[in-house]
Image (cartoon, rainbow, N blue to C red; front, side, top):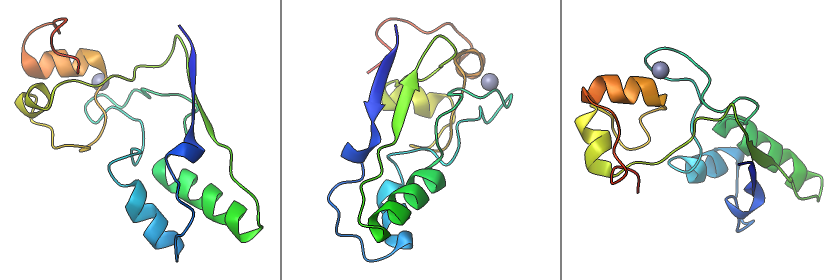
Amino acid sequence: MVKDLYLEEWVSPHDWKSLEELEEHLTGRIPEHHLCVDCGVNTHPGAPTKKEVAEGTWEAWQAGETWTGVLHFGDDTEVYMVRESVWGKAGMEPYGGCLCIGCLERRLGRKLKLRDPR
Ligand SMILES: [Zn+2]
């Protein structure tokens, strides 16, 4: 299943005083990068990093425009959310990076279960 997510909803409201303030707002909302911290596989090919979203948004605002970034989710996308307890058991901090599912399962020592995603 392919689904698009429009990023401008994540960067509103438009009252940021600086690029640094905007980047801080995006911390915990958009990953620094999408590479699995264990094996390096790109879990979300083509998706912008936090820095790219911030810079694109800031540059558009400076020009009096609205940046319209879109995240595409396709067959090569490995984006998911799990319960904080599961993430913690894998030794990960909240928004401490991305893990592909294989590496998450290896860290947990088991396959994911249906009740793990949140
Ligand atoms: Zn991995």
